[in-house]
Image: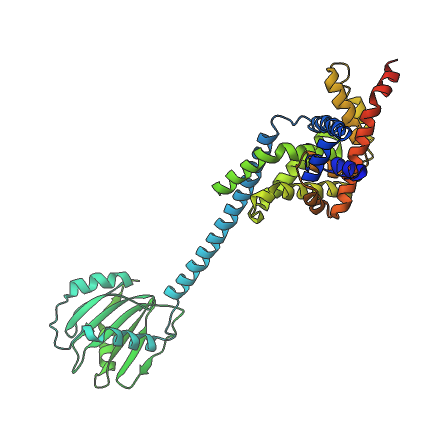
Length: 237
Length: 171
């Protein structure tokens, strides 16, 4: 190995000696001296370069990162929280809309749907079992009362059907039960006086605060029922 | 989350000293070096998931630090008289002879052209091979070897001449 190549290799990478270099060092005392000098120099360079590192630097670095990621975490939590709140709000609104918006646009549709929905619960042969007193107790909600019974009242109770809280009365009719609904006035449901479908017919009466709807089958004298109701009812306001 | 934290702390403990020294040799200022290291580790934290190979961590961090240092010059060119500043921090009066020698050599390294110094620092402090240095600095390996040779040769010549020079000064 020639001297120049040896020096170049030693000076470029003093710690990376291959076999040829090691052999050259062994065989040549000048090269051995050079190598020793270089070791000393390397040592000095390393020491000179190893400038003191601030003692607390590692801790500072960890601390800064902890704060930085904590801030980030807080920001993330805030974003997540506000997203959750938005979702909850939208869901709340949707549920509210679905629960309380009216499916039926007029009283007739409403009443027929209500009758059909609950038709299976009532039979014309049921025994009358509702007294005037308990009927009037329920009527109090609508600020009205009946002075006497008319017909055979099978059933009287509040019904929540399609978002409207109504009082549902079922009387024995000629061949099938007659349904009377007392509903609070509601702007969302259009008032119509007469309505019918292929089986049922009905009439509505509007009072100050309430609508009274009578629904029965086609054979039933609905008008007569309606008159009976309006003759016997008194409103407290 | 915890594992990332653990990884990060291990990385800081293992490599912050080398990184700080490397930063110092890039900018010749202890405070800037510290800032550079802080910035580097913050960036490293954000990108820690992209670091798949722990062995590559050192050169990865050094690459980040070099970029941070370059950014510093994009923002503002510091007209620092680096060498004078080094002289201001006078350690000669209170140090041992060995420290004086280190100080003297340190000055020589600082005065060395950047292109020679950087590979040398990477080799001595980073412990990188010629090939790895070539990778970090985006240079060809032969260029790196030549620069390493010249850098060390300059220092060797300076050290060989030193007793005479110091004798003159002292005399």
